[in-house]
Image 1: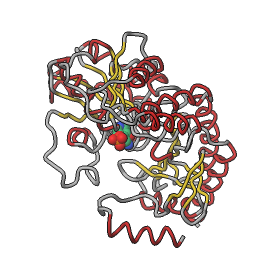
Image 2: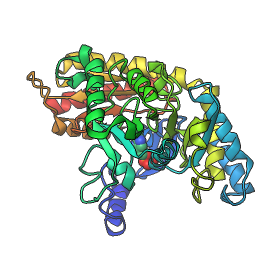
Image 3: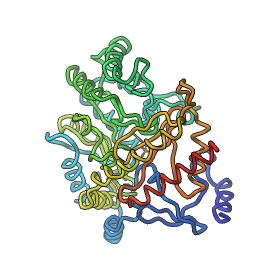
Image 4: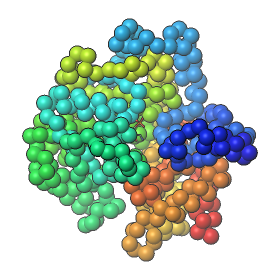
Length: 431
Ligand code: PMP
């Protein structure tokens, strides 16, 4: 609309052109699973601000908690003048994360900071330096996390030199595993063991870091059993296993954490995004002996665990519990999975439907048997969805994955509407 267009012009004159991509529709308000734009249109939110607003936009509990906290005090810095809700949030995160051992947490501001701190902690604990990461990984945009992120353009292009001692190995990506999905976990693990032995040396590895469902890389669900093998290898070799649940955590996949689907317990877990119910906050949580390894004063930051963000996070977790958001994510997942599978039989350009719960995606390919990624078609379908009022997001190393990340409080009727729109978008684009 016209107001969005005028904002786009002001943006060009004020905002770095390096901050780009996404929709050109500007938001004026939001509630539940609906965005309202500056020109008065309603949009079904299928991205949740990249998996953040799982409790819905303007969740009443979050709004009340933040308002009350803002009127009381907004900031002191926990390292300078401590306060209760930082501790209360660490207690709560310890309760909901996997593992029945003694846990500790540190609170930070963003997912990248959480990953960066998890690596610092693992290095302090092991006295080792090397970090093993995977193809298709995304861990952030700070210097260390850029090095850990797989994709060069746009995340790393022109931004080197990168942090050393990061080693990348192959991902157990069933859809593209050369010898087929049934061999994937075993062969990928054998490759991992061999590569780490040759390139790094087990004795030098501080941490293995993996997203239990890869997010930006294309909603890649690791072959079943791969995670369990990695954890076992880590424990046999004195290596810290870090699950990056920044995108998959806090109910998104139909469990509180995606690692639960694989029955594994990470040593450290990084969280952010949905944790804050819309406010910026992140955490590293894990085994007490690991979390307590860095020197006193070694972790922290001015804003980490800011009282407003802690209040928001405690309220968001209350909503996740009270409204059974894991159950709601499973229900959304059943609907998405049925609709997307049906769509895939209609359109052979949908090479695979994958994901768990409300973290589902389709991979778009050229339907000639080659599985060649079709980024242009992906882009066109996403644009057609946005024109029809559904804020859809793409992802993937090859730019050919359409991901669904609706708020977990979305009515099923909205999910169905969005799937109707996706079907129309495919029909329009493939005409
Ligand atoms: N890890 C994962 C798995 C992510 O998906 C993201 C963000 N997309 C990050 C880390 C970085 O989080 P942030 O953007 O909050 O720094």
